[in-house]
Length: 181
Image (cartoon, rainbow, N blue to C red; front, side, top):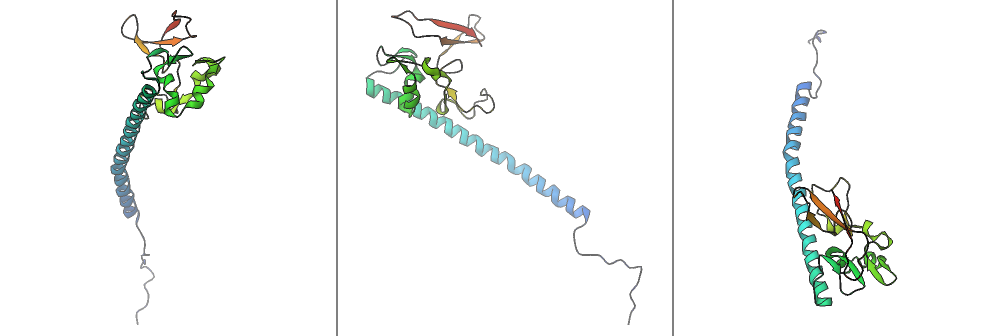
């Protein structure tokens, strides 16, 4: 019978430090390969949502045309002399935003400046992949400095100038305030 050697070290079953580091490195490489694929899927979903939003805006424009036999203008009265605003403002009832549109009525006159309607965020008016949207921005406003009021070239021709309507015009006299952005 053999006697146990007191100087012999029995190896316990398990991983060595090198084996553990190799496994961690392999997992890190697999995650590194997976993240770009996930990002591509996320970008494709954003593009699809953006495309769908544009389609819905187009359908809303045609719905407005069917209802009033004319398309809304870029800025002006539509469908008659009781509603003044931008193209996107006049489409609100046709993109399931009638509550926002009804909020803008004051004394029988629809205007985006009434009851602070211009500060209302409209999710459909912003593309989720828009790099110019600030972080956490959930939607463009119904009208105001960032959307709905029209972007025109500035006097220098390099910086866009935002046209903001301060109040509805009276009988053809438009009061438009220009501000450099």
